[in-house]
Image (tube, rainbow, N blue to C red; front, side, top):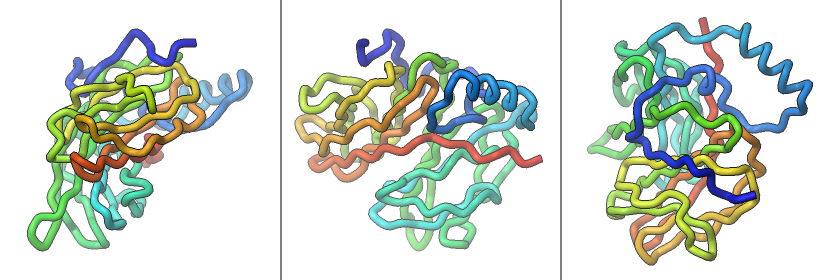
Length: 237
């Protein structure tokens, strides 16, 4: 089975909300009976109202920080696990992000969107750069890899198969992302900036419909690749 699907896309693709998919972002294997039960539970589960959006924070720094988005669970994010789960917020209405138990920013996003907000130090506090994760409806028969270039000094980042160097996602500008649907197979991947490549990382055991975030941090001459499953907070009425 080939690794790549024929369908690849970048974060700038057509903006189509896919909340049903996002509400069940998770990793795991389901048997046919379990899948049917899961589909029924999703059908009758509480869902966000129209206009809801999904927001998470990524910390590309070398320190681990306690981050809370829109009153959701406080999560420690850093080198080993850079991203919070996606919080469900009301589009067009302000929400608060806390860092270390203190208010860091009041943000707002447009309705029906997905967004990753990249945290950085600014003066004595923190600031955030938005990356739009909204895209076309994922292929439920494939796994999705979403690759983020979080290195300001790398003009074009690439996610590639290691050690061959075959591109999976290429030409990703700083503070942006590219995505690709793949067959759920075993592979070693690396992040590259020019001729500099990170240490290879093995893909986790992916299943159809899984979503994996891959973050390139470090520097242009010493990139670092970190993988993390994409997850969504439970919707609270």
